Length: 299
Image (cartoon, rainbow, N blue to C red; front, side):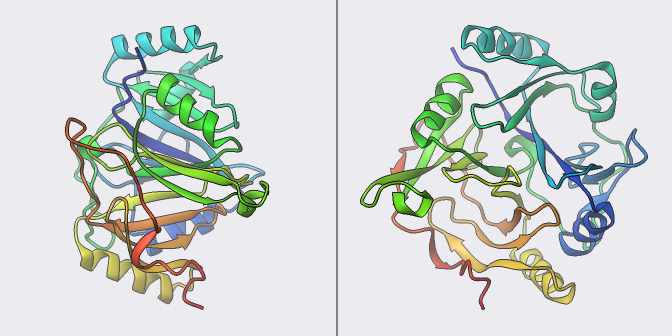
């Protein structure tokens, strides 16, 4: 038995520059700024959920936690039991934390590389429809908020932990030379892409340390034109472009990457692949992209 995670529910970011995040979130990414219990926090909406991206004041800039949604109290209780059996220490969300996240229950734990996961259920959603600044519609629903790529130091143990302990399913793999991450020449390390719902992957890991505790998060919109308009806003606002427009091999996403004020990238894309687990076969892709995605930012 494993944990029945349904989707990536939210991302929480610690920041020393909330003003930069407010501008980046609304003017560059085109997210709708919402309201929330903590007056000093930024709450961004992309759908009916009260907040998908929360940025709060801190003395550091980094990803603080990723929230993963389970179905209900029974599913969360089963997750507690499974974490105990797996020897993973966790803590319960305090009443103040539940109120600020607007969820009914949550438990928090760290993976072996200090990435913070929060399992929750019962998040609030709004009667007021979301109106994004540039009229983009984001792809969420049963696919959740998007996907996230986290740093690890042991790709073998990471695959075991995320699949056997947390219940993610392997969707795709890509190898890279071990010397890229300080391993011995001639060795190989793996990037793995893992899913829990029809989205090709909701979680991936890169075997390389990262002070921001995040490689990138991905947001998907419904139309290619919305990706193009966002790319124009990147240029207009002089946001740092991390990778040019391209189409990935594994999830077929047409996207670009832009550096956030948190020190990690945001992938902004469309046309992401949806998969059926009953028919899916995990394979190894031989390149990052079919075309594009110059990670020199086109320089």
